[in-house]
Image 1 (cartoon, rainbow, N blue to C red):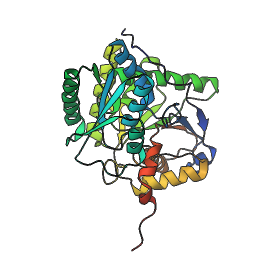
Image 2 (cartoon, rainbow, N blue to C red):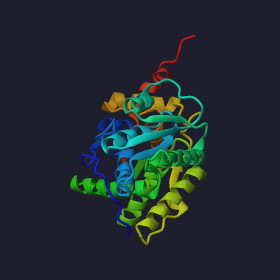
Image 3 (cartoon, helix red, strand yellow):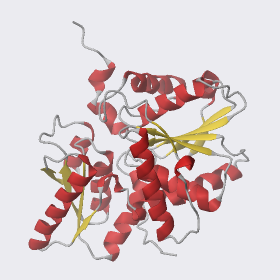
Image 4 (cartoon, rainbow, N blue to C red):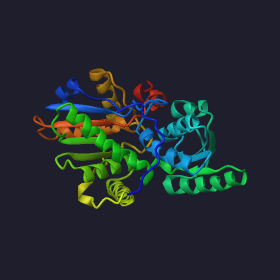
Amino acid sequence: MRVFSRYPLLLDETPLHPLPRLADKLGVASCWIKRDDLTGIAFGGNKVRKLEYLIGQARQEGCNLIITGGSPGSNHCRLTAAVANQAGMQTWLCFSGHRLGERQGNLFLDELLEAKIFLTGQYGSKGLLQAMEEKAEEARQLGYRPFVIPVGGSVSIGDYGYYQAWQELESQRERLGLPPFDEIYVAVGTGGTLAGLLAGQAVHGQDHTRMIGVSVWLDQKSAKEEVHRLAHELLGEIQAMKEISHSDIEVLDQYIGRKYGVPSPAGNEAIRLLAKLEGIFVDPIYTGKALAGMIDHLSKRDMANKHVLFWHTGGTPALFAHVSSFFPVAT
């Protein structure tokens, strides 16, 4: 089994706690939340779990420059820049498109973190990865030792962080004396978080629990294929004799809204609801849409005796980049 180098970032296990008022609203026996928005650095988020192993690998290889990419509002880029600073490395961020937009939310934080920003004119993971590799070659010519992290950190090394997170969740659940969750909901962007969780579930067991991804970007077929590919790559890396079939992967794609990166009315309504009932914030690009998906999916069935969990993957700085979507301009 491959042993991944780890650069410790998490201060501790992230909190697991109940949402009693939301549970009453949803008509479920209990609703819990896993707080990966509280991972301890730069506003937190799920990418910290991935970056523990990605930065660990970069350090093992003696690299001094991290190159990654995404949209100008990327949570992954913000956290990568923060973690690289902590590890004493520089960061180059390759952004999609031709314009940055207003310097607020994550983009503002990227600049505070002094990451070097490049606009690539590319869109999509493959185009951005090509741009990153080109920048890596430029960096080598300048004497840097670059380490390239694909969009979202969704590669086996990073996804291993969520393989470990599954074990963390199960340990917490057992200590609290909770029954197995019937359903767990998580946002799906590049797919690595869900892939890691499914791999952890496959290896360590808990067949009772349905893992349900809520896509914020890809259609259902594409998202399932990507999660399947990533999960199998990870299982191969750790030499686990387990299989995950396409039928084991559940992804809902009807909550994306107009398109990726644009808040949806349902997502914003879910944000307001959670803030009102539980005093917790989710974001309009990922977790708000995932929460809207969970709320709607549960509302269509009798779940009175069921125990559900929402996995909060962070992203809250995006709230400050989309304030206007909550307050339509009067005409």
